[in-house]
Length: 414
Image (cartoon, rainbow, N blue to C red):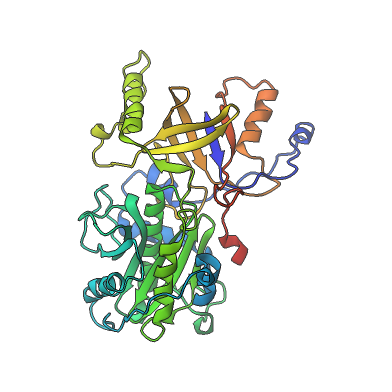
């Protein structure tokens, strides 16, 4: 079993002392989460109902409102780049119908060259090729050739458009009359908008290996920017992008100049080649016809065309050096939750050992009162507990570019 987690290791866990102390150690509290409901519910949960659950799950996990310029400085390194080209957004209509907004914003971004190497596309009418019935209004994609299908696995970030300011999902501080939750509006229209934003990010993160991502919301002539990670979401204050076009322009300009890691990608993961993907498919095929068959047929692309998850190569550090694991669709994931541990379990092909292994990828809580899963296995093995899986590797994921462990940052602003 290969296992990794994204967070710094805890400090003194006191595992040995726990053996002499019969009192129970603190555990993770029980919690109602979207991916648990959708996986184990006795009936299908429709999108509208799922969004309500996602809104409930994310309540209290939005941080802000952060001034837009501070957001650009903190998360998008605006001070390191040349000023963005000027963009005229006055052609983007407001206070009318939503649909005319979509292409006009695309034209303003794409024609101005403010996001070189990327294209903003109107995807409001496109069907997701992975069978997902979730459609943002805009999607930023790499390159200039855009597939006529909506594809979350190749999307940089989504955007949502509303014709009226009243559909905004958040309060700014001076507007709020709430005491328990001063940021999140609770009206039906606003909660629906927030549910859409959450569902787009949850879907994006389920099809990609991300440490964080961005998105944006347009409400008439106003806009908000967002940064999402597994601890929550940082929200900017509302700004008028007709009167202050430089803020929205800088968002796209800076994004185009960030590295993969700075754009939120887990750079220990890459797309597998066709040859590498075939290694996985062949190994699974051979395993299925073994004398002890297992139900892992969904790993084969041709047997589940409705879910063409990208085949990826994940670099995992083991005792004898790095191993590359080829994975496809996880048989367990947290696709419907935008925050939380994001546990994904895979049947993986180890390129070095030329065999199938179980691979688990998740975020874990950074708390000295909680032992990591790796340390728990180590302690159980020391004490001779039978029927445990053989742990081939376990540990925290290091960030390639920054030379430190992958961690979330939203909690730092709470």
